Amino acid sequence: MNKAEIMQYVQFGGNGRLIIDRRILPEYCGYVREIAIAEGNVAVIEFNSYGYDEGGITYFIEFAGMDELISGMQEYLRLDISLWENINKTGYYPDKTKECGFPARERLIGDFVGGLIALPKNSTCVRIADGYWKDMIETKNKERCHEKN
Image (cartoon, rainbow, N blue to C red; front, side):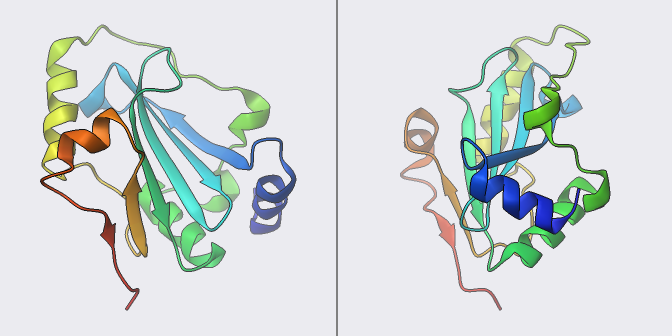
């Protein structure tokens, strides 16, 4: 994949998002982390229960430009852009390798409330989708938006 492909897919694709990564993280087994690039130089990172595509934590992470987004995502994923996958085309979904249960949910909630979920660096703004998850931290944390240095 390259920058031109990403920009074209985001601009002219059906839903304006290009999914570049979908996996289960060991620390949050039972949840699938999906990363998409959306219009406006935004990376969308979602943590949804296995088998569901909504209802989980959704972060909208804004970058100053597409180059900054790509750089930030390469660092975050530890994967060069040339190795990113167009999951919109492949439909890849990870196999559930083991049962996880309640402790993973507790860890995800604890990390979310504590602001400990790893996110890409060098963004200009991090927002959380309205709803249950945002309401959970509404009084503790506000949107983490700042001017890029």
